[in-house]
Amino acid sequence: MSRPFPHRHLLGIEYLDRADIEQVLDLAETFLEINERAIKKVPTLRGRTVFNLFLEPSTRTRTSFEIAAKRLSAEAVNISGSTSSATKGETLIDTVKNLDAMSADVIVVRHGASGAAELVAKNVNAAVINAGDGTHEHPSQALLDAFTIRAHKKSFEGLEVAIIGDIAHSRVARSDLFCLAKLGANVRLCAPSTLMPLGITKILPPELASRLTVHSRVEHALEGADVVMMLRIQAERLSGAGFFPTTREYSRTFGLNRKRVELAKSDAIVMHPGPINRGVELEAEVADGTRSVVLDQVKRGVAVRMALLYLLGVSGLPHDEGWPPS
Ligand code: NCD
Image (cartoon, rainbow, N blue to C red; front, side):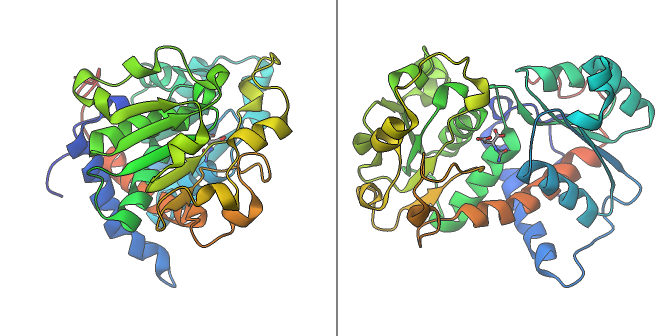
């Protein structure tokens, strides 16, 4: 490996620089091929223990981390919300200290509260990977999205990426924005004004601020885009307040259908982190159409998570090195 990864944890893309991101993507490239073999296993992380602590629902992210750990020969232990002692009133800190006491090397954590992964990192010796904390960040998703875009578009420089949906409650949108802007792409965020966070234009560091534009009309966001990323309405994070009149109305105004996708470049790709609400943000014919790279995202996600487990699971940096991120 060219250099040690300069971070002990992966808490958010906000704390990474371009070289860190490229290091993960380059390493993921070398892991892709293992997933194509008949025997999909290498001994790289033999004897290491990875806990997947998922206190919010997940299909892709949890299985992707589990498969990634297993293909590197680590012991993967899965704990989910409904079967953990969180249901008996144990605090998150107590839970993770117990996992740490079993000599965890990596703790992958998903939690409904923004900042939960950082709290875990401050209380354990293991390396911590944020697999989604509330509306804050979902860094491994952004890395797999960037990995997928790089495979299809080669370079990020000047690429026009439209991210459309519930920007206010989407940790994927935040992480993708940081990641793609740092890599040189221009990001167009589009949502109804009620689902666009206040102060979003100030979220990027000043030198990257010009890479972000905000749109309230989906047609403007789509015009000439190279990449179209659709996001789910995060219904579980909406308080019941009227963020938009009806799902039908939302779909008509902001959903991606066959006609609308034609506004993007003729070679534009369509992405979605899943789970898709078919017929709401994305019509089935687009989700399953020739532009869709949704399943390629999932495939590449395993390689990206292998790279992350490798970089954080064997780096052996002391706990306080690389934290807080400089
Ligand atoms: C996303 C998440 O959990 O933030 N899903 C995922 O990890 N692939 C997006 C979503 O739930 O809408």
